[in-house]
Length: 172
Ligand code: K1U
Ligand code: ZN
Image (cartoon, rainbow, N blue to C red; front, side, top):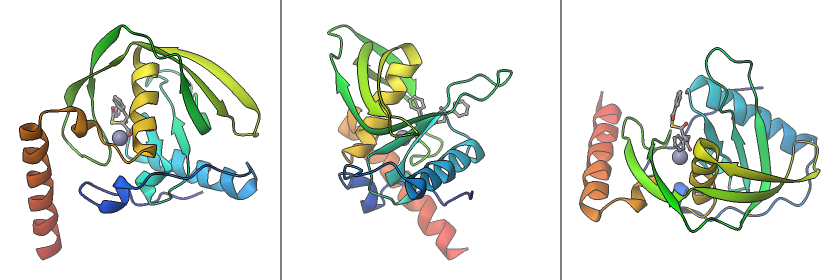
């Protein structure tokens, strides 16, 4: 298992639409293991494969608190069913948009159909942080970032700062 570099906006690869997975096999499980290691190391509570440059429809998450035992979740080819009409505002961050946080409005609840680590079909009813996080990660699979839900002014400011930081990091 290894920690892979996380792509940072405005890397164009983050705008790719990820492709469905044909088969959950050992190679895919190795990718999911690396994703989980990368997410824990960051640290974060979710990660989509495209964030490490792999355009596959795969997400990992762990919403366990610091004092709880780890609870990794793996979502292959996830689909959102029945998003609720009622919405909530939740503060979001993103490992690909480091150090920026802002409130995003999304459906409060949704049902997710997906394949698990063993390739078995599962259905999960999500609400609260789980619903927010899964929708944030599903956006990554479509090439969408949480900053795309903010005003153009805020998004452009964030991208400008990130580009400046990247130029500075390259020069030093
Ligand atoms: O980049 C990502 O997609 C992961 C992102 C997930 C997320 C967070 C909050 C709302 C929606 C989606 C993160 O994990 S950002 C880091 C973060 O939230 C966190 C880090 C350490 C401890 C607790 C939270
Ligand atoms: Zn993200």
